Length: 582
Image (cartoon, rainbow, N blue to C red):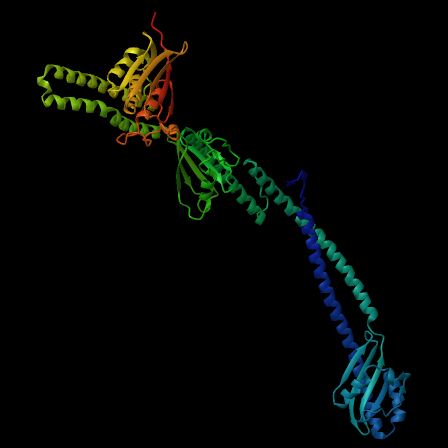
């Protein structure tokens, strides 16, 4: 763990099994020996005490019998010292009120020095025997009831060698035995633990080898005990793991090769949005993607990390999204959630730019065809209608309208071809076939068929023999649309088409009108499809300039439009220059 430039190392304290198990054996042996010793000591002390009290009671009972006879004979004073000396007891008699009827000192023992005298005498007067030893059996006090004459209770005090020295010897022997038990238990535990630890160490070494991918280390069981059974089980597990690991590696390699062949990008991510694996397609489609790194957010308008974070939610549904980073790229995203019991989610990225482009070109082709073909079709229909109404019977009118039909039919054919060429060029199916195109006749033909208002003068300024390297029908389509727009919005004044060579590689064609112009705020969108400004024709589709822009791009040219509201418009087109052969 590293923080603020300082490294903090965490050390773990470890103790070998042979030592802690040997220590455990020693502790168990010590506890057992101590408990046994305490039991033996307690039992011995109880036995010695019972023996001392029994001897004192036996002597006291004999003295009680002798003193009862002396009380009956009335010679208690003479009999008391004799009985005390014979039984080695200090004897004291009490009347039924608990008062002593014998001297306070007998056999060199003071009555006041005897412990618990009052309790002992009271017990005897109640008709019960009182026996208690003190100082490890050296002193024993006995009180007996004596229902005869004036004496009601007998209190005896005996001095004996006691059992203190015997208990000391016993404790010394027990302590020695406890010490040997602890030592032998520790050594036995150490030996057993060492043997067990060595066997377990071999299993641990084999497990470490498996952790590093080495499945060749075999464990010899030797003894058929539980550890031996564990070793045999481990050996079988090692073989099965090796087989499973080999199978997984094979399947993983096969899956990896399969994923690398896919056009779709496949990415596996964990719950922390870290990339676990990604194929080449994913690395190509997602900028900044790298295995082992955090998933990037390559698209400003779409939060990819937020999309993937939702794959680890509780609902577990497959997530879908469509992303367009720019006008030329389209992606579909499928997020497969991790699911219960799994820690990885799957992200599939598909580049559908080509399909989207094809569909868009198909839509544009239909719209372009509807827009471009309506003018020649309307002209042909109008001419036919006029002819059917009687113009066919007037040679001059008939020839005029037949010429219109012929010219518009040719234009219709050229428009159809140019639309097909443009559509194929945009989809990439077919490159535009360029060739030298003489510019002046083409521009003059467009000017003649323009149909401008009567107060509008149309002029073409073009040096003879000027050639452009282009496709004729697309050039016709570009300037027919520009000229038609100029004628539509110019009620009076001039429409001038000027062509000139800029340098050795480019030709400039400018179309300038004195029409209504385009408002400043509308100019950035004039090449957008289906856009019609407030000053545009309400019956139009908003496709004319969009088609012009597409055609110019297909011809490797450029177009610029400059306009002021009420002051006219200037459209400047540059195309590659072509030189005459030879």
